Image (cartoon, one colour):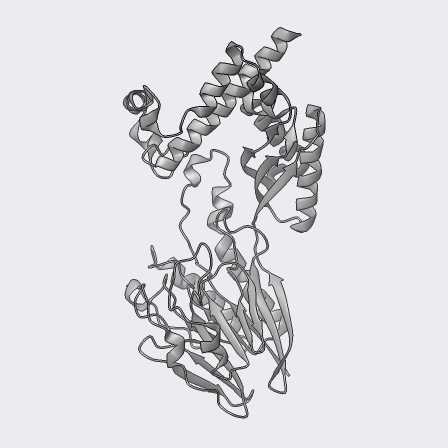
Amino acid sequence: MFKFIHAADIHIDSPLRGLSKYESAPVDAIRNACRRAFQNLVDLAIEEKVSFVLLAGDLYDGDWKDYSTGIFLSRQMGRLNQHNINVFCVAGNHDAANRMTKALDTPANMLMFSAGKMETVTLDALSVAIHGRSFKTQHVDENLAAGFCDAEKGVFNIGLLHTSLDGRVGHAVYAPCSLDDLVSKGYQYWALGHIHKQEIVFEDPFVVFPGCIQGRHIRESGPKGCILVTVENETVKAIEKIPLDVLRWTQIEIDLTDIEERRDILEKVREAIEQEQISAEDRPLAMRIKLVGATKLSDQLAAFPEKFEHQIKAIGAETAGENLWIERIENKTQGKYDLDTALADDNALGKLLKSIIATPDDVEMIAGLADKIAELRQKAPSQAFGPDTILDLNNEQTIKRITREAKKMLIGRMLSAGGENEN
């Protein structure tokens, strides 16, 4: 019996994009997270006394900014070498051969499979054959799996490949292949990389995406880590999903249906944050909160978003302290009564609300908006509108989002004012 670790998409020293727009973002914690998660992987390998480690592509995020990236990796490989643990890797689209111009001598216990053709490494003491092939260029459109050899008899066969398989939402297509292409080779385990969400695609044989080991932005939310595999008599006996992330991105949805008091909203937020803390096992959290449901308070939330945002962030600080960063609060609630009632009236307020709702989100369709944006550009520094800011006015989707939020805020304040006048 022996164990091995299957991991992928390490992205050591991945650059941080877009965080400059968040004043309170824990930039240092996020910047070092990929390194610390990789250290956790090494710790796990040593603790579990694994026979080897498989890394299925994108060990790096691209060419190194400086040699500290390579030195860090060499140190971690050295730790594994002290325990006689070898590492077998393939390069993916981010660390393809043509993207890496800097290099250090490959550590003695680390083998990177060739990009020119499939290679096989046999571990006689374990009766294991590892078949792998790296990316030569960043954009690989061919089916690399088709070039893998059939399984060797009498050994445990592993295929090591960076691929999008038959496609996954949110991931570009690289080295595409079908599940049948993999199953037909007769291997007992396919160690895949590229898809950042953990997925056991098939179990006979095992075809596995371990996901990335550390989330880097809100789209990579939830636990991230590796797969620990136990093999006995050329058969997979156990598969364990082991979290390695040191900072967890999470998206929570809070249903405010029928909530009628502000304090009840804040209490539901507090309960949700506390539950996420338990799920994350006290890891620091980067959180996006989405408020949904039909509630009478929807108009107030839309009318005064800054007030509720500050109240919610205050609860976060009180509940989790520095272990929580609230990345964004999205108000997706809908008014339960007031808006429908106001729209049904044929008075001035009802007509104005209908006009606002009917207004399109496109810049060209709103009279004077393009001129206002141009005026804003002249008054504010150019860096305030770059692609890494929340006001990227070159992005059409940003304009539409801001327009929708402004309309919702305006409607909320008009309804709130209307309610006050009625009282």
